[in-house]
Amino acid sequence: VKGGDDVRDFVKGGDDDDDAVASPESKKLESEKLQKLKDRVQDLVRGSLGAEEADTMLAGLSSFSSSRGLESKANADSTLLKLTAEEVKSAIVFLGTLPTPVKDTLAKTAGYPSYESILNLEEFAQNLYVNKDASTEKLRRLYFESFSKNLPTGTSSDTTNKEKDEEYDLKSLSKLLSSKIEERSENSTRAMELFPRVVQDANEEILPSADDANVVFELLEKSFMATEKPIKVSGGYIIRGKNKRKSASELLDYMDAKVAKANPEWTDKYQLSFVEIYSDATEELFEDAILVSPNKFEPLANKLLAGATTAVALFSSFVYCIDTFGENTEVMQRLKDASELATAGGTYDIGWFNELLIPLLVTLGAAQGFHELAHYSVAWLKQVKLTSPTILPSQALPYLSFQNRIKTSPKGYADLFDIAFVGPLAGLSVSFLAFLVGLQLTTTVDPATVQLLPSLPVGFLTQSTLGGTIVDLVLGGGDGILLNQDAATQVPLHPVAIGGFLGLIIHALDLVPVGSTDGGRMSQAVLGRVWHLTFSSVVFFVLFVASFTSASDSGILLGFLLIYSFTQRDMEIPCRNEIDKVELPRAVAALVSYLLAALILVPLR
Image (cartoon, rainbow, N blue to C red; front, side, top):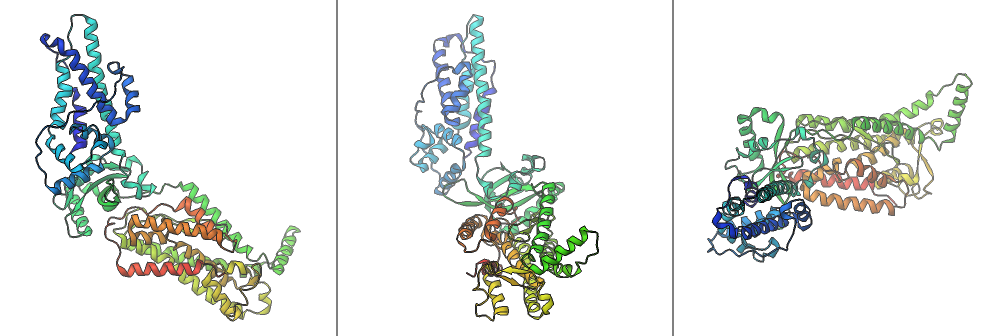
């Protein structure tokens, strides 16, 4: 069934036989024939564009200055040539992917008033098959060739001018209708809704053309049974169909070799991926398709804005670390005295303060450094390019996260999982080790240094079930005495312990499975795009509710959701192979990671 192409061929076919005129013997019937033809064209325009838009278009054409209601068409009188049940099923699925204007046009071709009037789709498919000739050449001849050959003739110049105006109106209408149908057909699919804005809003200059998409289409042969020609979408072209190879990876390896051999320059700019997309048919939620797209995706964020955001986050992190000493009156008094000496031009020494501040900064930096190093190392091994990180600020933490974008597509979901997984794993490992060491240093520090230690309030420590419990075990003996104090009570801790505790929360937030966070990338690799979107939405809702119901007012979760909504709500760019999901060991690793993140982020009280 080639309904979309038939309608386009039909409306574009009106440019033939420009000079044909009717014979004098038919002059009596010319007026009636012309009116019938105008009525039929008027029905086609209304069925394709809708009554309101059609009336606006027709009002500007002199031949259609008056309107009439739609009339029913004659039913097809041909004897049905039976299609097989499988062919009928395939035809109905394909019909479901067509835009409404094309459906209505096909319905009229088969003798129905409109697509909505069809009660039996199987019968419609059979009837459309019978009328396949009428849907192209026959209707084209009846509507346009017949019109141009039977134009009214007259002796006066006024009559001749009127005939030419009416013919011109019909030709103009055919071109307008053709362009409208082309536009509707290109924009009617919801296939790309699962892909991020960096793909959908890619610059037209880097997108493949129709000829580039046909390079892939013409090489498919029997490896991929395409159900239609390449369709232009936001971000490239899609080719729907069914893989005839044993696996998705085998199809990609085969097609990569074919394309590289046939057109070596093509692979320098473009790539083909085997992905899941939303189905336009009502019977299925999603389907497999080949996506022809650029092989590199530049982030949409302005570099100047990203640099400014990083600068703000670094400054706020430095201020946050200093603020951990804010409740220590001894430290604040000594810093005040040093400031007064500096103002008076005297000599002052704050080396003692730097000796306490630097371990805190180094602990946070080391954990994040290993986090990023793990990302880039695995990405390099997988031949995937990442952007330089943008540091995201936070009002409740030193910073929220280091955000790096993936610029080139991973080969498959396994590669995407590995790149995402190793970062939080490294960051949490370093932070947890520093946390334990820092707590031990807290218990062994000399009395003079104890008076200068930074501190965290009990209410903040209880934001983490894991962290708060460990603090209580090491410093309070595990009896709950420490954490049962007032939320505003300050707990002095060694700077390394504070850095480790803050690192646990920061890297655990990276594991939250929403959008394109590291946890979100892992979720997408395990579940696929469709189910990751569902899972991510549920997690977001739970965190949003928890941010208002928590007894603490630190705002960690709410701040995370706010920044996430602006920076990481999209899913990741397409992998080359998104049909094969990750194996069971990686799925188990993802589950354990999510449970660990929950243990860190769920409040103790």
